[in-house]
Length: 117
Image (cartoon, rainbow, N blue to C red):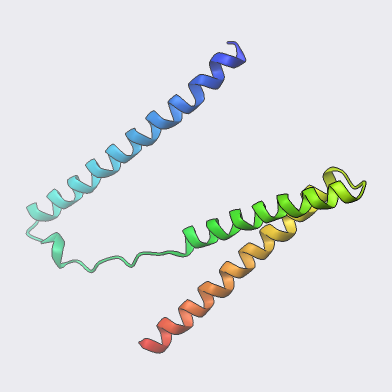
C-alpha cells in the first residue's frame, strides 16, 4: 500500500474507532443500569463518582512545558551551535517543570479538600 493512501486511512480509522468506542461505552452503561433496575436497585441511589481533574491538568501543563521548550530550544539553537541537543534538552526540562507544577497544584488541592472534611 502506498504511503499517501495509508496516511489518509489513519485519521479516518481513528475517528471511526473513537465513535464506536463512545457508542459501546454508552451501550454498556445503559445495560448496567437496566440490570440494576431488574434487581430492584435504583441507579440514582448509588454514590456519585468524584470527577478527577488531575489528568487534564497534568496533560495541559505538560503540553505548555513542551511548547515553551520548543521556543527556548529554538532561541538557544539560533544563538549557539548546539543543534538538536537544544531542542531535546529544553523539551525535557520544561516538560518536567510542567509536570512538577501540576504535582504542586494537585497536592495543594488535596490539602485544601482534606482541611474541609
